[in-house]
Image (cartoon, rainbow, N blue to C red):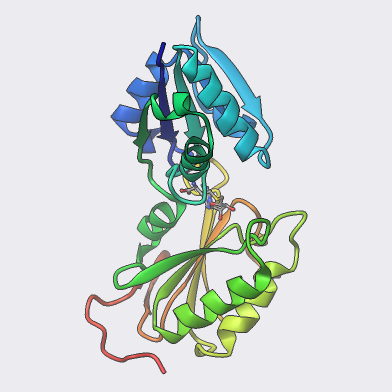
Length: 259
Ligand code: SAH
């Protein structure tokens, strides 16, 4: 008996950001797997089993969901944002690759969601308007040295950089180090967008400069696990507007190749 497993992106938090396809899949699933707070966003339905797990248990969660599906069930695994961006989709693929043939026989599909960097960018203009990249500052799954090399390469090549996982309780210093690293190559005035809990009731979005972006702001919430940071390029511009939040954008045309 071969079941079905779908990896579903929930978007950043606002239910209006959930795609229709994601909502339909969640409604039709027999079993739901995911990190507890993400599962809490999915309405409870009779006849549907729920299997919350801890944030750090991606591999075990993927394995449990795959085994459940091989028993013939329709299983949905949820991720915040997009499941392919630092989330469950790759964990599922990894377990399928390493696992038994029964995993490869499953009907597996992936439903995209709005990832945090797109949600944050849309709140403030178009900071990702030209070439950009995304880097996770979590060194749980890669050495910090590699993070630094990627930051150097990205800044050196003139990419706008979206920083995921900037800080956690177990990783208090990484964000400050990353900003210090970027300051070596980028001007102090480079615009930095700090988006926190975007799409949730406690959402905040602020613009600072690279010189100010060390995580200890006087008047905006500190960078934390629910924060996505977008570091601009030499070309990224801030449009001040009286009585309104500024607009931040990176022009479509590259006028200067970063040094
Ligand atoms: N799959 C998710 C990312 C998982 S990594 C996605 O596509 O968005 C978790 C990181 O994503 C957080 O540490 C934070 O940097 C970012 N993030 C997730 N949701 C967010 C939100 N609502 N507002 C701001 N950042 C968010």
